[in-house]
Image (cartoon, rainbow over all chains, first blue to last red; front, side):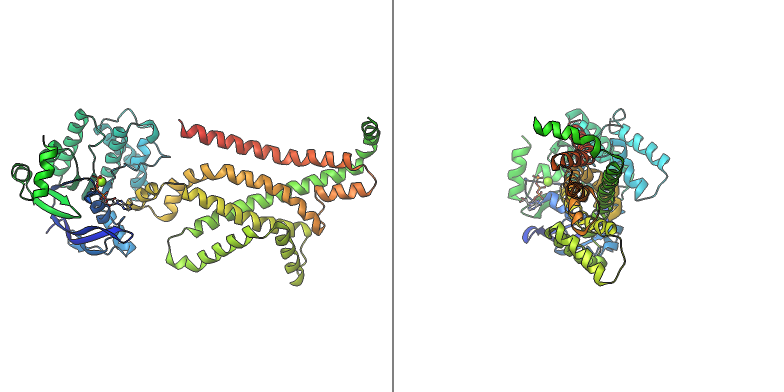
Length: 244
Length: 231
Ligand SMILES: Nc1ncnc2c1ncn2[C@@H]1O[C@H](COP(=O)(O)OP(=O)(O)OP(=O)(O)O)[C@@H](O)[C@H]1O
Ligand SMILES: [Mg+2]
């Protein structure tokens, strides 16, 4: 049984269709990367799966359970199991790095405060921010905020993690760190859907790579296959540009 | 010169025991009208703003009522609201103190205006903040308490206080239904033959004594808000 089953998904903004039928089945522990040109709908796909841009058609099933995006109960169930790291991080501006990570586990999941704060500090340490626990988002650089956002998502212990451009604001050496974190997570059985423009990163972490174009998955293959011999002409063109 | 010397000679008599008592009482009445009306109005305004944005479908009728209330009382002049409360309570045969009627009228209008100011504060919170809370399964009230209110109140407090300072001036209209507050006291004193210059200068200082601390607090909050943004 697939962990996440997306079938013929359509979605858009105010009547403008953006996703035009996306189908993708992701097994437990798999890391599927989404690549494609800017505006091809990668972020929209992630936002749609988590219900921020509600699907207009098709279906999403998590662990075999179909999601009803009109039902708050179903949405809540989904969001208890799926976490997202936004392209723009979206940290809570009024909370410190530590509180950003700890607030949902304490307030929503009702876990013990002390235990959560210890874990939050450990997670922030793992992404190289152990010395910035008390900093507010506006006191942090883009890359630092992004790493807080990753720690915040991990603290929720999601079964499925949606990562939108988590390497775009990072220094090269930090890309390595985040790569390690993601590798560990995949080892722990967490399923990931990762949007990235960093082809080296994609090649390293992915079990499969989906190339998106015009709101559809134009090609889906193992990274070695896709990078060596893309079939779709748009994928050939895209890869020729981004991989030197 | 003539005016000044005549005012000076009038002062000992003007600041006699009974006049001071009257002024003191009027001052406290204006203060009480302002504070009770503003505090209750602010709380109700906050509640209305929260209700108006509530996602629950079951609350839809209440949300409509809240919106109707806000839109209506923001557009009615304060004097009309005051008369409305006055005559409605009279017609219902209720025996309510004039002071209470004035407080209720101020409460109504302050609630409607602060609700609107706080609503603008909610809208100033970036959608991304609401969305980040939503995907982590925060409920509406938890989102407000933990994320939105700290943000929204920071931007809504200065305009809310500026509005409440203006409202203090409006409490003068309570004299129209005979509440003995500062403006009414001034009228009563001038009718007793004291020179208007002296009376109104005194009243002016007393109004200032009420609104200036509030205005200062507003400016302080604004500065702190600005400082926090550039921290
Ligand atoms: N909130 C929105 N309202 C209207 N249109 C939007 C909105 N967000 C995105 N779009 C449009 O949807 C399309 C897909 O956007 P999306 O953000 O999914 O692309 P993307 O593949 O993530 O691009 P990028 O690589 O630049 O992040 C774009 O044409 C964009 O203009
Ligand atoms: Mg994007």
